[in-house]
Image (cartoon, rainbow, N blue to C red; front, side):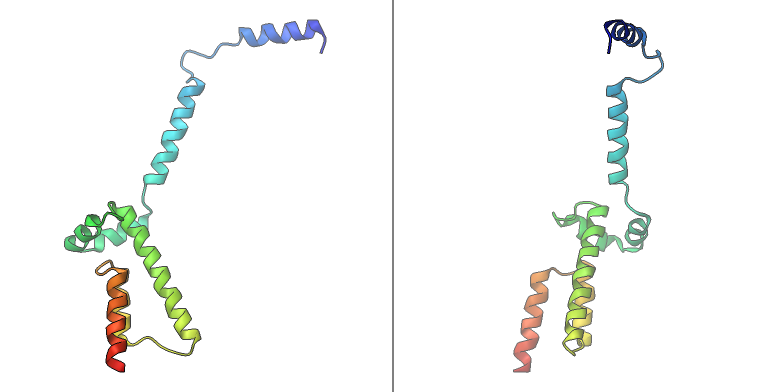
Amino acid sequence: MSKDVEEVVSRFFASCRPREDEPSAAELAKISEDARESLEQAPPSDCVEWWSALPVAVQQKWLANPKTPTMYGAWCERRKRLEAVNYARASVGLEGFKPSPENEALSVRFINGEIEFPEVIETVREQAQRLR
C-alpha cells in the first residue's frame, strides 16, 4: 500500500468515532456474556414441569443433597440416573433376563432420588443372599 493511501486510511479510521448512544466493545462483550450465562441458567421447560409435579418433601430432599443444590441440578442428576437405569435394563435384557418387580421398584426409587446408589447395591446384595 502506498504511503498516500495509508495516510488516507489512517485519517479515515481516526475520524470514525462511535455514536454517543452506541455501546463500547467492552459493553457489548459484557452484554453477550450476560446473555450466555442467563441461557445456561434457564432450566428447560420439562425440568420445570418435572419439578412442579414433585411433592415439597421430595424437592427438599433433592435440594439437601450437596450434588443437587438447585432445581436444574436435581433434574440433570435425575436424567443421569434414568440413563444409567435404562442402560442397565438394556444390558440385563440382552443377557436374556428381566428385572424383578422388586428391582424395578428399586430403580424407580433410585431415579427419583429417594435412595442413593450404595443403598441400591446393598439391597441387591441382600436379595442375592436370600436366593442362596
